Image 1 (cartoon, rainbow, N blue to C red):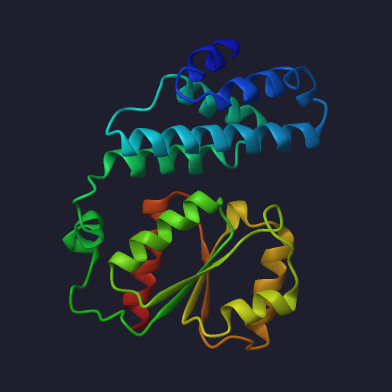
Image 2: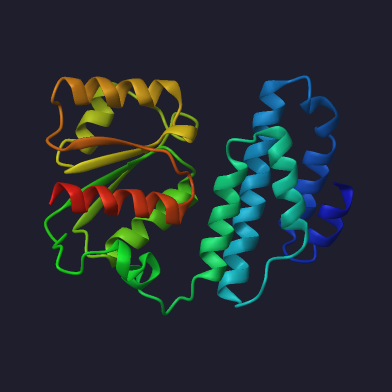
Length: 221
């Protein structure tokens, strides 16, 4: 893992700070869930930052990102596929490709009007949610509401209810939502606190989530 940082520092000077901070913590990570969580979050931030820079500069990500993915499988295997999918979707989908073309003609009803719909996306990493929202807006969805997990933001039942009350469909990424947010969403759904439907999303990657959501929308409308 040490060579990750040697190569990564040439991409962004912030990686130098990260390397000193993270390398010293790795020896303790296997015995401490708290340290594993800190390392996982920092690894994700570095991978996302490098991916965004590579996308802007129209180049491939540096090799150290692949090693970060391997490390995430050790420290937090639930987020490793999400990070890998973000990288794939960010770099392999041409920017000129429309969201409908990206879904494939066999998976999309071009006559479906989404211009009056509000979709909620709960859970997942903030980068993943942002990418999902971008795709949905390109498909013609009127608006999207993001609900962050408790690892990112303070959660309360009233706060979540206020955020999603006008949503026609709320999808939550089950593998990266947290029991507290999952419980709140299920409870609000049972009591009819928001007008739409609640959908558990089995996929964590951007493309998979968008496909699940659009398939559900075609069933609903």
